[in-house]
Image (cartoon, rainbow over all chains, first blue to last red; front, side):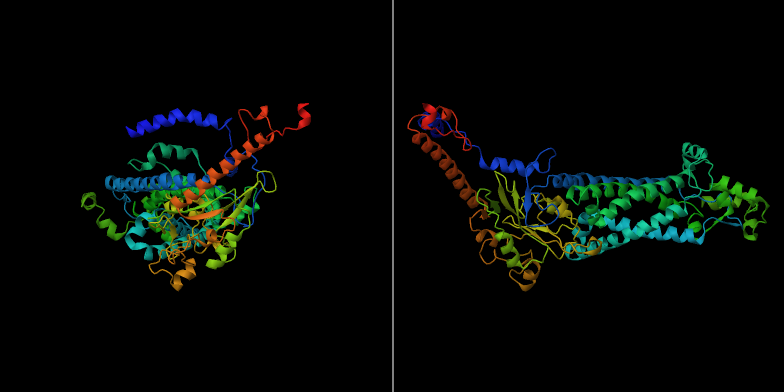
Length: 351
Length: 220
């Protein structure tokens, strides 16, 4: 009640006071123009005049960095949750595929003949790139998710230096990966161009869900992975080198600004998460998904029956060239011959 | 509990850079790292203003939000402290900071920037032991533990830079704003009185910039 009276009193006296003070004065807030200039610096088509600072550094004359908040929301609100979902769902999809399909065997069993598939140089290039890729993927994932996994469980005393080690590995493996990727691109380019037969392979689902899809030396899945590794890899490498050596931006028209660095981070993180998700599929298919696959990159040679079942057009081509003897004409191995009875073979497969 | 804040009065800052120098000297900061800097807007033009800016010790600090190792600690007094033992030198805090406060040594190879360095509000580091030699080496003097306020604000010759409890800083600044308004107001009244009769150009409004001067010649 008292407050009500007071406010009424104020309302009544206010016009009188303002009248007594003479003509009303509109005094511009002396800070308004200043703060407009501070914020307008980050906007285009505005000239705040000369902005100087005795302190020289990256954007030391910028008082308020508006882009920082956008990048914060991108990293914390979009990138980390989305990356966790994408990688998580990929792993779940691979696990489901494993449960449904199981390990894919060589149906005809192993033959006595090995076919040369990769040269030693190709294998070294592949494994150097692969080791660097896995190292970069793990260290990158630590930088992305470490705050939620490593720091709470290991504590900042161990988690901090561990993450620092991971960051250093990431920084040094990056340029090495760039070189490896360039060599890999040229080493595996032959045979990786798309052909019409690849569309047929894609329509048949690559034989992943059963059935057979014809394929040449590389199937459409391998070709797709190759081109993704090369094209997305170039994007990841280019943006990563910018993040690694930010002074590169000084020599471009863009300039070394925080907006440009965070843009490089934006490109790097999105493309890297994409290529990591795809790599999980490649790693699964190349290691434990099917019989006889890992040994190809391990030894450089594949089983003739494996080639016939998974790369039939390539196999037929080699047979026509006379490089490979057809598997039907090979003398069966003694051990295989005794078990070649269809009944025992099926029992073994079931058990 | 006090809530610590900086405030720089743009009407008072004269761009002497003494706060920058005092900060570097007090904490023995390496070359190339500046925890505080003075920015001048419209340098050499009408309306020139200078502002001293450092870490503003945000309540919702973006640096603390984006840190991959969660190495920031916000004290009860609202001071944003940074742990150099946990820091990995990724630079994310610098990208997210609105004020460009986190600093890095720039001469590292392969962007191994070393540990980030930022304004501590002269409160040292998040170390348990205050005023220890280890804390001094890493973060500089811990003036807050000594019962003092940040050196930059304490030695500001025009008292443009205010530091301390947010309520006290706000009160000081509010008084200044009120007094400035009163000064501008009384100046207008004085000009009116000096004219001996009401100036028609002043009725209704008057701004500080364009008050028309009455001259005896113009009335004749």
